[in-house]
Image (cartoon, rainbow, N blue to C red; front, side):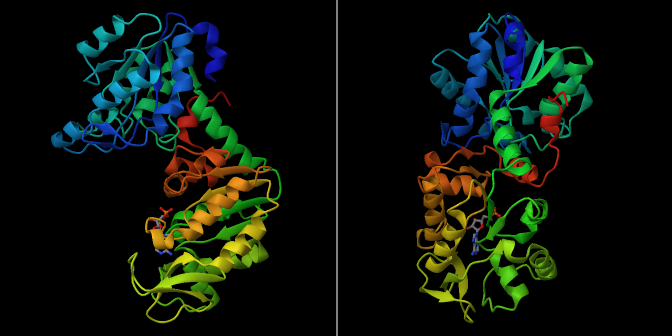
Length: 398
Ligand code: AMP
């Protein structure tokens, strides 16, 4: 990891892949968690006399028009405020302007390169890990540090491309502190959890979480299933689901999972059911069968109690996916209650696996009570599926 390179950093051009893919509206940064999460690595590099040359993507660049909305310029400005020092922004991703700016850096300086996905306009060079691009970017530096967990499940020029070219040239590549932290928490939870280990899975679709269920089925002591995906399991059990979300082509698979999981699998007992998908729709709490004309949009109070009962002795909890339509205040209670309860489990390692669940715990104000909130949605899901993430493998010695 980057701390192993402490004595190598002085005077070196350190290429750092960060994840500054933050929400920006009218030039103003929304949630800057991903930026603050990268500060320890950036500060470590510059405090040890390195020159930090930062790369990040922002959104998806498909047209020339997208470039205006997806420039990293406002991010550079915000980063300068966070670091309390100037950040040089280079509005291109290659060429003399970039090379000159790098050559003019002094020890401890910070430079941010324009959105790496500007390279996607000309044949998906960044997202397709174009060999020439990875080689070019690698040629700009002496050391490479990957600190972008959010894209670690992708094989892009700015992570795998640079890392492999650096290594091929005999230069060092390492993981940053954020990447290490993600690996430590998610990795330990999956490979070496303190028991009881409880996984909470929610969100819209069973199909998105099959890989996680299959991987955790032998490792977890209980798997709690809530949210829209629970009703495909209801259908598999022959419980009526009304107009609730269902993946008909996954009902057989849900049966197989239930058979394999036995009493490890915990489903909601009751649900908040509404007449339509609308915050203000008339709703009622129903136990068991969901009546015709109703759809389940949140778990009910008995389910919350049951889930809390399963969770109360847990030593490791991994949570991915909301328990209901948390975006609508009238159907956010189940997610909120579970989030709040996790915050009380001071003896347990509580991990939120990115994406919508991260948005949910933040929106609900419980994020700071939990042990670890992952910065990667897709990446954390793939990690929980037991997959090797190329962005991590590229900077690991193992
Ligand atoms: P995912 O991205 O798979 O984690 O799914 C998150 C989405 O699932 C959120 O937008 C929720 O509103 C939605 N969701 C959760 N529970 C339900 C439900 N009971 N019915 C419909 N959508 C749901």
